[in-house]
Length: 272
Figure 1: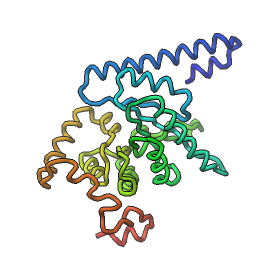
Figure 2: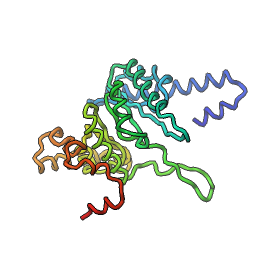
Figure 3: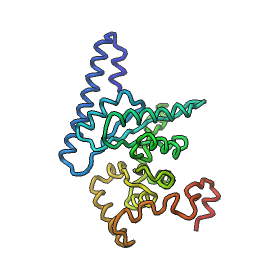
Figure 4: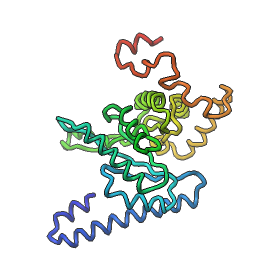
């Protein structure tokens, strides 16, 4: 935080440490109180989220979130590899150590939200599942940088996702649900309409996360989406979501390479 950077320049290091810890503790308490209030007000499961890079600093916080009433815990992992000589084993162990320590700390389900820039996403998800992850979210959306050419500064780009980002979400949801059926998947990023929700479920998602669309249109979009989904299911004669979940994932379609094609000419050769 900016306040922490300012305090770091202070000559009073003991006071600085105290203030930083006080601010952090106050923010954590507010977050825990929010979980308690939501748990009391809602009948649906409450999934608490931690933005993390390393696990050690969050062990106690995770425990407190469970005690506050969280039904599950999402680890929103922010890792962006920028090394010229990457150590893939070190990155793998970062995830392994994180999930193991969190699973040893809490008894509620633990979900890992990863970025689509991760190397070999199926291998990463397989590693997470083997080390105790109950589910994954595909994907988290990193801070989007932009450049102000007048002020010559790096600035924040668009904070909302766009519908064009759905393709990567569908691709990896379909591949992961087919190759690693044991793990639960929540699709995220680029989901704006009720049709997008249906597509993600057909690809194998057990849940979807919508943020940008709700911020843009308000919470009233949720019952609209549910109504449209119910009408679509009625038209297709589906009585439950399980009847079409994963119907078009990597292992159920006749040609799985449709999820893998990346070449420009192959794309146009399949256009009507």
